[in-house]
Each structure stands twice: as C-alpha cells, then as structure tokens.
View (cartoon, rainbow, N blue to C red):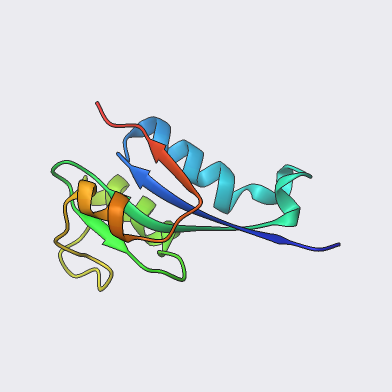
Length: 102
C-alpha cells in the first residue's frame, strides 16, 4: 500500500482545531482511509497563544499538552516562532490550510 504525504497548516488552535489535529495524527489508525496518508502539521498559528513551525512536522502531542496545561504554546518550545499567520500562508509549504480562527 503506497502512502501519500499530506502537510497541514493550522490557523487557529482552539477546541475544534485541537480535536481535528488529534484525529488526524494521534488517532489516525482508527480511520482506515487515513492510514494510507503520511499526515504532518507543518505549522500551528494562534492569535495570542503562540505559533510553531517545523517543515518536517511539529510535535503535535507536545502542542496539545502545552495548550491543555498552559493554555498556550510554551516559550521553551524550540519550534516556537514569531511569524504572522499571513506570512505563514504565503511562505510555508503545505497542502491543506485549515482555518479555524474566530
């Protein structure tokens, strides 16, 4: 079975976005059609809770834990960046933009 790559960029990381990230990356084995996809999130951008980027895929489990425990991306997260979401949309390489801002 061949796998296809799917790079996601999240704008907004509230409840709905966090659940979508969990389903796509943490619980993907439960969904047969997702098993064939090599899914990665190349960036997560929030309005006021931090932004992280990694072209090979951010550490989603860590991001989810930080958002749950701290309510934001930790300042000690090595993937933390200072970049406007509009710049991310123009500059990052991704296949699907998931925009869930308020």
